[in-house]
Image (tube, rainbow, N blue to C red; front, side):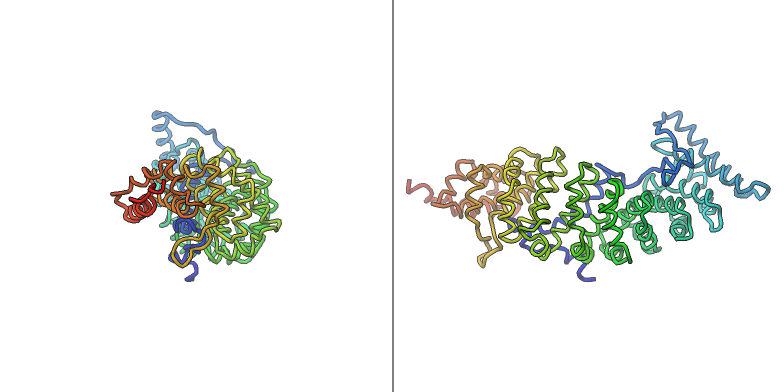
Length: 519
């Protein structure tokens, strides 16, 4: 669909009244969030150490680190276990099935034993074709489960080790079907989630082989563990950058209802995984975003934000809210209506996040506010008159750089309305004067001095508002008092033409040879 192509994914320019860059960040966030998630909260690939569904049928192993000597021994044991599995598969006598299961269980035990399982040794010994044989239809569930578990932990390894699962993918996908037992289907979903977590190339292979529909159907019941694993695997599978998978997913019958049901009723661990699915749906697909916006999704993520203190859950629900609000101008104008309960709820939960001790929540909340602040006059007034503004002003002067940049977008957007005919945004003088009187100018000038091009441009644009818009021609004096002239003169010979022209133009216009003559 043309609506979902990357080229059409830029938001309405009104979303970035101060600097056009803010409008384009939703998609960039979607592409990078996988890396953030892997590093800060949830590994994109997960080692399976306890049996599926937590049923206790298969005991977990201790989370031991191994020494070099123990590693050599583990490799040798793994190679031997693969040979034993090969013999067990070849054996056709009495007790053949139990012999295979025992051999699989031993290999699985070794692949689950340490934080860094002996995957390389298993692959060198020829484990993959044997495990594929053990996934054949008609095999007992215990055998299927052990084989899928081994493949799960192999897929949690290095990129080249994950790619070794290619011959197993069709059978892993096939065992997601309704004829499989839940533990087997869940373990296969876990293995596929690890494969999808490796990168775009393997995601495309899985999508071409039809992994998405059966994984989506696994989200429909109320089976907590199964839904949690399926949601995690799906979030890895649709994470882009191509939006087609996200669009296909939201079209699966019953999927939207299941997402809303799980967000409303589920425990926090399950809701977290479902929220990550919403993150990628709303970040990558305009179609999915429109479907979610027309549902109760915004209301539900706001309720979760208001009632939870779990950082693991708050991050994806806050990101989901930001994506949905950034969806298009329709969202902010017809869904977030000033005076309505849901809108008041959105502002309250964003203020809660600004007060948080967690920097990622402060940054995300500021990003969401920047999109709301880029909307109508009523939306700007809603934020301006709330408790958010004193919090934002404090963050502008005290927070880490990445947060200060997001905060600057909010404050800048509060001071302007859509661009006028001369290409310059129209001022909201009351907001500008109040924010400058409360000390925000120095924070913007600090951004001008930064090495970050986007932040510097944002700082210069706010300085232009001050120079042009402060009453009684006070703008130049205020900028001079904060050493703003020095900050702009640093760009006199800057390599970036836009910044150079912007800074030099402001200096020439407001601090040229006639500046100060009247005094």
